[in-house]
Figure (cartoon, rainbow, N blue to C red):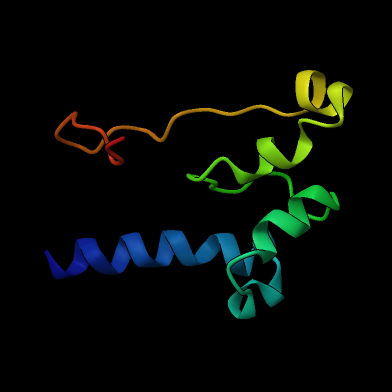
Length: 84
């Protein structure tokens, strides 16, 4: 079990070490993921409140053609991560 946890944490940490996560992400505040996505500094972010699509409704081209949303994946037991 311990070795499995170590492997998962190492795998997860590789995203940061390989530059997939911006170094300053460790200091982000709540709205920073939205701001950086809207300013095209990051490619994707979790946004369970849907505040990003709401902010873009006034920009029909971006809202309809440049923004995509997907559901969170299910947990290993097949149940949803987030409940509405």
